[in-house]
Structures are given as C-alpha cells and as structure tokens.
Length: 95
Image (cartoon, one colour):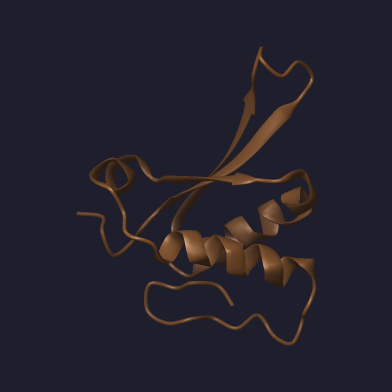
C-alpha cells in the first residue's frame, strides 16, 4: 500500500519483498517532519536487497502525489560501496 496524501493506494494482492519495502517507507513517512525535512525532503536509505524496487516505487509515490528523487552516494570511508537513498517531500506540507 503506497502512502498517499489523500488515502492509501493498494497495489493489489502481491505479498512479496516489495510490500515489506513499501510498509517500511510508509512508516518513515508517517512520522513527524522537522522544518529541515519539510524544506529539503526526508532522506530514507535503501538497503541493497531493496534496490530493485526503487525505480518502480518512485513512479508509484509520484502518482500518489509525493515529490520523490533517488540519490546514490559514494563515500571514501566505504571504498567501492554505494549508498542508495530515496528523498521524499511531503505534499501536505509543501507551501
């Protein structure tokens, strides 16, 4: 179920890893937002085993009204390791 600015959107009866990803993201989005998060967006790290879902979920969250982007970060502290994030801007809080 995608967390919509109006109501939840049920993707169907698919009960797989994707549903776990969506539930975890939705939990993060339902929490209180700081002033910085309202302005810059809430950044959620996407673990490696979720990465295959990122592009499809970005489209679904956008269709539900969210402003979503993907970020890949390379760190010198972790050579050869990329960190993946999705950044969400809450449509209800945008002024």
